[in-house]
Amino acid sequence: MKRFVIWVNEIDARIPRKYGREVPKNLAVDRPSLEEILEAAQALRLNIINIDREALNPRVSALDENLRVNGRIVVESNHGKSKTLKLITQKVREFRKLHRKK
Image 1 (cartoon, helix red, strand yellow):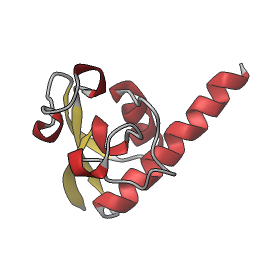
Image 2 (cartoon, helix red, strand yellow):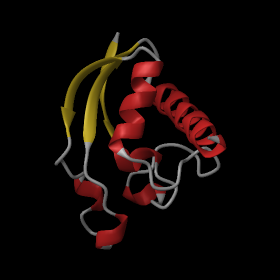
Image 3 (tube, one colour):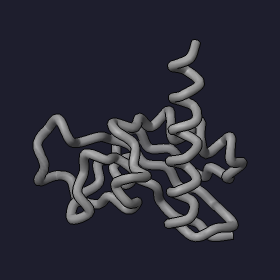
């Protein structure tokens, strides 16, 4: 299993790739929260090693305050980081659709 860090800004559609977005913009999620990412990771049965709610990705420190999102998790996955991030964004979108319908 591969272990890596997932920062909240890596799936945020508002963040340009230059500042750390890892997924394509058409797959990215607008204003994701750490809780949404945790919920998606648990649904995907990823092994969550560590949660840090206060950590700020150094790449976004130059951005406006409203674009900065704190939080990161360390996970173990059978997939690579890119594939895992895409799976997480899909789950977050699914959860948002379910919550909107209620």
